[in-house]
Length: 550
Ligand code: F6P
Image (cartoon, rainbow, N blue to C red):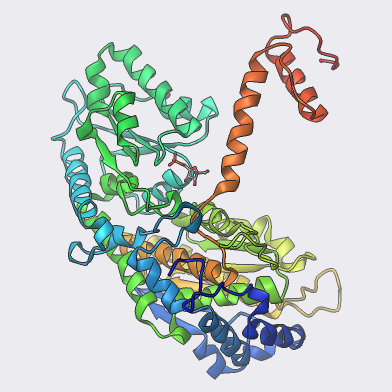
């Protein structure tokens, strides 16, 4: 059976043709009038909408659904044969249909003895190599070209090759780690210049991460970094000692000048935004050491087990995805805010923005037909409590419907304990809880300027404490939530063809920006902007620019 067919070999129906979809559409008109204030008085309902897994409480009770809607959503998942699709994912079937490839990120965090065939020969060995490398950098056995211990790590990569490692390395940064970490993603030269500004060429380690090893930003930044090192050391040996790469195209990294022992492989069956668990997570291994990296993988694996074993009505990723479907497709909600109430998780909105929108920002089904229904909405967000003094105004009193995830951390996590900061943490939690409560219940006030309507559905996820294991579990939860959304919409969550299109356009424009008089095609707006930018960069040489230039 291929991924674009149902078990019977028949093409899968469009989402809106499913029986449960019709039932949900009927329920939605009643739900519009159901108030969260009354739903939240029902403690049995609230209990049914809470589930726990891998050190995280998942509370969906502040969502505008009752148990009848929940039952219909679970029917929808059944109709989509979600269990068989989930097992196809774990078994390495070609769930990425447009590229005829598996999506085996779960293998990257599975124990050695539990590896699917496609990964058994490569994943455990690469993981051991990565951990040995990380330990040798941390304890000073592996050094820069003059024998001095590394002090700075410059990670060069973008998108999935940057957001996950940056999020985790920042969130779990430990005061006793001798290394500092700098992440360079943007092709804007200010990014690499900042990372190198006060770097020591003898003690800086560069990690070049690119699955494809063709990404413009990464290769441009890596070349600049290599030149910087060569200019300051005048020794090719410095590059051999101080550059490592992570890529699925190891031959391209070798051709770039790296030694095979400094290249960690990736595989086509792991998508960039799902690759944190591979050697792409090198900054995590370097920052936390072997035990920390293994804890991250173990936490993610625990969530994989929950996803495979928990019954549907207590299955956190499935429930979250089904409630998303309810909000997006039946209540018409077109934006979703990620609100971590933990400063250490401030990069989470950016990470989830890529995970969710690059995976499910699609309008074409597996078989090439139109989804006919909306898919992922705008995903954005920012850390609490600072967002309360910026965009929460719009959330409380604006005209747009939204949904949101609150992410709270139960214990403050200071090691050693810092009693002087205990009130900070209690205030943080009080604000996170209070904002969700206000969004649900609103504020009745006789002055219309002060009143807030409320009735906005939100999720609350509470990590017992933030550590490598719970963060691994949280990120794996989001991966599976994205997968479950995709299977209901019948889209391929594992490709990203839309991004490729934008990359090609920049190549032509790069040429045009550098060449006076180049043909600019039919787009007058772009023509004028190119001419303007060329004039700014070389005003004396440029001819034929008809724009006024101040
Ligand atoms: O932006 C598109 C994309 O292909 C992402 O999916 C990916 O994470 C990123 O570019 C980086 O790709 P690579 O790891 O191949 O450099």
